[in-house]
Length: 159
Image 1 (tube, helix red, strand yellow):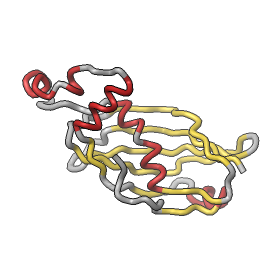
Image 2 (cartoon, helix red, strand yellow; image 1 turned 135 degrees about the vertical axis):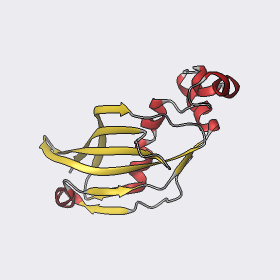
Image 3 (cartoon, one colour; image 1 turned 180 degrees about the horizontal axis):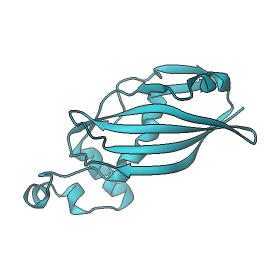
Image 4 (tube, helix red, strand yellow; image 1 turned 60 degrees about the vertical axis):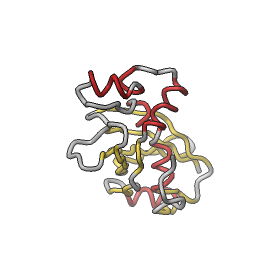
């Protein structure tokens, strides 16, 4: 289930390094296959067994997509994996996923698709004990113009 890189593509030097990246792209992850097995395991983990995700034969017959598609929340669950691939911040004691401002599932992700994430540091503000970043994330499906998902993620860095 992991992407091919195990070492982050970018090491950011503390809060000053983050501040220097505001408004810029942090990076683009490697492609990852969204297999039917991954979709099935996510359905089992969450209890979301809607046929559009797990019933291949029915999806081929009845779905407008002609196949099963990934759960939107499966896409969201990959954000930490992609973030870990893209960057690490040195000189901080703790990094906390603080939540999401906005999520849109723009286009479906059929089983077997290749997905990657593009990350941009949209904003960095001071909070008690650290800084809060807003990451503008775009999950892209190989060969498609429209993104699969766009997300504003809040991440806190404590020093």
